[in-house]
Image (tube, rainbow, N blue to C red; front, side, top):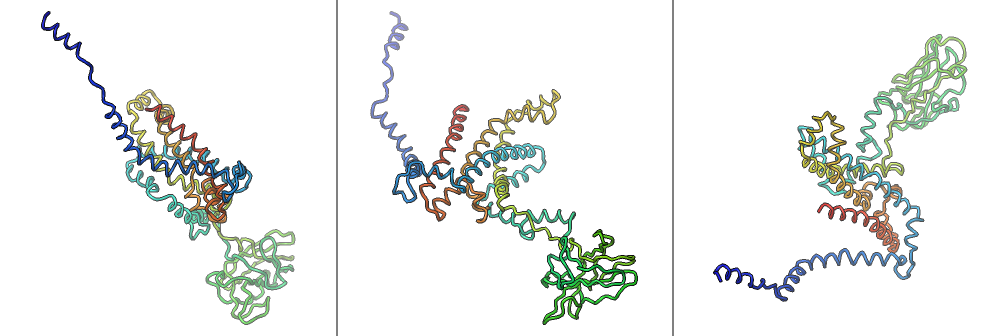
Amino acid sequence: MSSSSAVAGQQSAAPPPESASGDEGWRKYLLAAGFLAPAALLLGVWVVYPTIRTIIRSFYDRDGSSFVWFDNYREIFTSDILLTAVKNNLLWVAVVPALVVSVGLVFAVLMERVSWAVAFRTAVFMPMAISAFAAGITWRIVYQQDPNLGVANAMIKSVEGVFTSSGVLTRALPSSPTLVQKNGGIQLKNPISAGDVAQLGLTGIPPADVPTGAVDAQAPEPVDGGIAGVVWRDFKPGGGTPGKVEAGELGLPGVSLELLDDSGSKVASATSGDDGSFAFDNVGGGSYTVGIAASTFAKPFGGVDWLGPRLVTPSIMIAYLWIWAGFAMVVIAAGLAAIPRDVLEAARTDGATEFQVFRRVTAPLLAPVLTVVFVTMLINVLKVFDIVISIAPGSSQDDATVLALAMWRTAFGGTNDFGVGSAIAVLIFVLVIPVLLLNVRRFKREA
């Protein structure tokens, strides 16, 4: 037998390496269990036990003394407030995730085209650095109805003031029976003709509402062939005679006057001076009616009621979009940076327009990233709470309520109905489960 054969025989006859002993195997599992035990304990205390306890509690009454089966769940879909919460959550799910993804995609594309991308990214992402509750307080100030306080209405007022103007008086009442309110203005009850004098005394005007520049009113002198008049604040401290111009009573400047013929058509107009005097010259024969135009009492822009019952939910959605658009932009921008540029250049070389490149190349390649952002937003809006409670005032919280807010108000907001509150929590949990399963399946597929 040759030496090489002997060596080969010895090698083939060599026993296989010994497997780990039983003690070493148990030691490996115990080591893994030791690392996992703290996390498992925390999950059990903070997730598993509360979940099971909440599910059980949802089948009991308010104080937990009686088993009521599904009565608490029936309450969710029969109570007006809770049903509004369900409808609002459906609206949030249908609108907000798609809107956040769309705006984030637009911002991410723009960020690649502007030279000041760092400043743009910082400005858009900055709302993520503050809590949603603090952001809600900020937007509640923005949405104040008073244009002098709320930024949104102040901006509208600055534009609206270009096209419309408010009247010089906010309100007024006739001071004597010779005047009547008609068509939003105030008129003389009886018609007058050329050479007569029209005295339009007003009351119910606060001192702060008297136009600036007003001086003492003077009783007008008749005008040949015309009609003279005065409009004044018919109020004198210590008393006076209604309908008569007296010393110390102020004229009302800037008031719009109208001269109406027998048919009620306007034939002339005038504006009162600082002392409230005005005149219509060369009016001709016939009888006329003198009155204060309704435009004098046109109310100034009082602001849009952003936080009223009709607009409170869309207003909160805008604030939520302001917060999360930066997150979507950053994630999508990372996906854009990973797209091979030669693919985009090849599409442009083949004659595709920028829109076609975006629709046919960029968007399909970004589909996994867009799905991540969409699913994340879907989970977030199902449990949205803090921004709703911080923006919606108490008068419209019932109209803006969502499931998470309804759960908190029902269980801890004074009602103390822990049965219905637990049922709402279980409903939120059930709604989130399909989205979580979809997310897990996507992760497994990518792995």
